[in-house]
Length: 472
Image 1: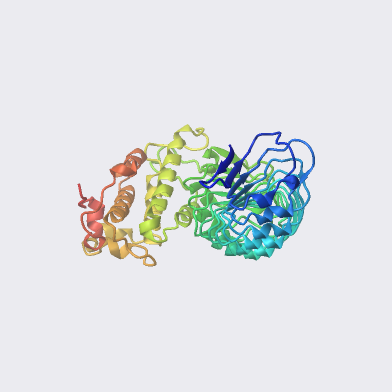
Image 2: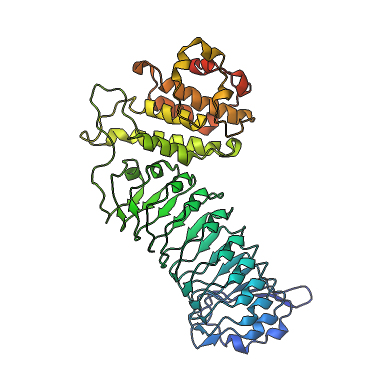
């Protein structure tokens, strides 16, 4: 806080943030006397009088940090000369009364990492020049009066992790190129007038997107099933649109999903009971059936599937997104573990909904786990009981579209899940493990051990009998 000088007495840093009542005006400051200023933070400083950003501020050629936020008396326009501050890394001019358009000269700030222009009165369109900010990591332009389409040039911002364009008047569609932003983990375009369907390309995010808010728009058509593949998603907010069709069942098996808001749409069909187990969920104001999609089974049955249909089993495969197994296997395992944790909740369901036993879901789990690893439905299970199982190597039944794991710890994880899956499919139901046993084998992660040999030397027969060697 205050003024900092370098060794020769030249001012390099000014920080009067939250001082509330700094006297004077920005226009009256002698900016030419600050040629070495690198840091300027005047956030929440001016509580009286009208202020504007002077053109002279652009003479600060060494300025790297500029924060004028929370000055509610700051009015006028963003100066066209703002683009002269080419050393800027951090620019925050939010929560003011600034009006006018975002100048195209902002594209000259190519060193910018953080940009926040939220909660102003900015109008016009988002300039295409914003796509030149190749180092930008966080961009917040919410709560303005911006209109027009989302410029496709945003797709050039490959470093972008946070993008918030919410609460504006943007129209058109969400460009499919957004799905190519390899580092994006937060996307909020809510409360606009986006009137196209949700692009399926969003389900192919190469990044670990965690927050996706497309609510309060005019999205129509069904929810793309590709969203089931967003393995790291924690918040999915699609409320207050015109979405129709059924809820993709695979959303129930996204391992980290905490909040799901699908309210105020035109969705129909049944709701998977696993979705109802989310910490926060809202399906209100939809013509959905009240009954959850979990079939009741007779008390004599020892198998009560976690997946109410083959579609739900396939959905888990879709959301597992194996990809490069050495880097994505943990996502598969997390999805399977998530289904295990949800199955443990079956004991708390009303008796007229589901009759659960201690081995209620093992068969369904085994089928889905094998399908995940094999990349196809495990139809030829009779091989396990035949002598030919000794001659079929586990490496031969892995998904042929993926390279087999060479890392012994990853290989050990694959073998662990495969062995458990085969045990869950035992021809004699009483010989199958309980879900508790399966859960204990899969967690905690620290108990997993690397395989002592490569997969090509382990037969299906050894998997069936769990005769594999692990490194101690």
